[in-house]
Amino acid sequence: MATQAYRNIMRAARVAFNGDAPVLLEAKNQIRQSFLSNAKMGAAEPATAEAIQHANEVANFLRVNLVQGRKMGDADNTYQLRIHKDTERGDNDSIKTAGAGVSGGGCGCK
Image (cartoon, rainbow, N blue to C red; front, side, top):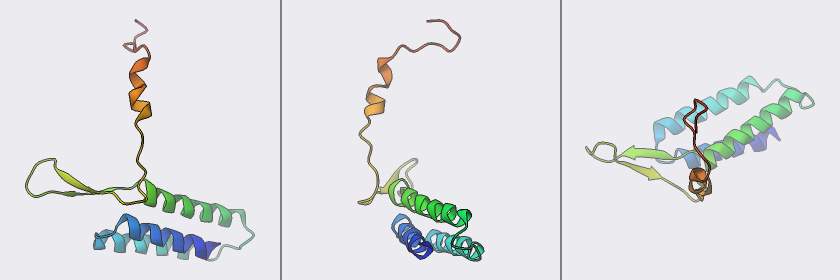
C-alpha cells in the first residue's frame, strides 16, 4: 500500500510540475523525505493508514487541482497556464446561480 501511494504521488508530481525542473526536483525531495520519516511505522498502526491516505489525497490534489502558470514575456499580468488532461474544469454553475439570492449589506438591512 505504501509503495503504491509513493508511486502515485511521484507520478502526480511529475504531471503537475512537468517542464519546471527545479520545482519538480524539490517536490520529489519533499516526498522522499516524508516517506523516509514515516518508514519505521508498522503496517498495522492506524497512523500508517492515515499517512497513506494523506499521500493519495495529495497526489489527487496535485494531479487535478494544481495548474502552473508561466509569465509571458514582458507583458504585465499575462500568464500561460499549463492545463493538462487531468486538470479539473468546473462548469461554473455556482457562479451562475450566485446572484439568484437576495444580497444584504451585512448590517442586517435589506
